[in-house]
Length: 525
Image (cartoon, rainbow, N blue to C red):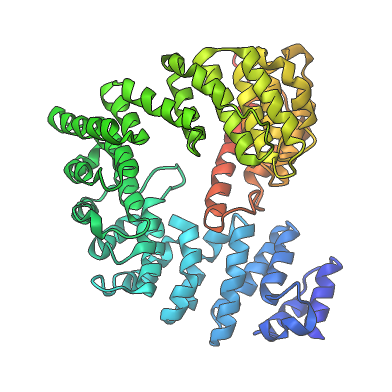
């Protein structure tokens, strides 16, 4: 009854008072009440915190964080667990929550189980959770010569929280810490940079690559991606990569291209020789692409691309994307590109996306605007028959934007997409590129982009659209809304892959702040 009264008060919008605060704390652990009261609120403390944060009032945020603090410091394990769930939810909803709660999370780390329970959250917080790094380190460094799932989970989190501290631990356990290796290989900080270079870890990766037959699961991609992120700093690993090329050619070739770009001439020559042999003998597309990047040799790549385009393999989209990057140098591929366009007019998402990639390639390779417009018009028409094609429309609109005024025949298709928050930003971007400047209603277009960001439909695309519209397009009310995206406490990005939500929202906030600064900067005479 008391918990029902708390929820009733929240739902009615009543002020959060000291008696309500005391009552909520007295009910902990509240998880046992969930099935009897409200199945939708299966974590009562987290639900109360979410409701308070949803009010968007600074004082309500303070009391929400105070509830979490009290639970995290409680002597009962089940209450601390509920506090951790509530902290997790708060960090996913509030931009100020991570810094406010990072120190208090330490209080709940009383044993190994609790450290593991909070490791995922600490990893998602990244460097903001640095104050809690010392609770992860002892477990992360345990038993490096043995398989140890708990140590692997702790190390995966530590790699994201304190990379320099974690790198030697990963080096010591490489081959037995798959989760941690995955965290390092997929690492991206707030600026989008790869995992920081570590000589100790480089030596361990080289040793591991020297035994290609012993690699498991995703290890080939993870190890090579880690090396590729280091670029020329990882050049000592070129011999191991060249030796591993026959075992996993695609992954190794991409890494070789990254490492050998700025290395010594002798190392570069060795890499080119290995890639040339692989491209000639097995027609491996990444090897042919790496050969072009390193030596300017384009014939093997053109041959591989034509083979993939004419065979109609599932790599047609990748081949078209590579052809687009070559531009007029791939003019000989134009017939194969045209033949690969889906003559059956299928409306499946893969078919639509492949035709979009082919249209983009034809534009860059041939400049044939009429042919490209015809392909894109077909894509827009077929997408109307497929309820799952919203993102295909987005991709088609972005390709239309590349055409500039030549894409004007598709303006009606683009205008039809403005009402969908997912499709609107790309449609705005394209209309800005293809339309006559004097005929554009920039205020309405800005409004469509802002609505998309505010509804978490395509916030990153909305920033692209607002940038294309220019700093003078926004009204004072729209500038206020942009300021909320930039500096509001509520996260704009609230859905997606859990491990990326916080990082993506922080990147969006930085982008929105840059747009706001450009829109409010004094004009230069």
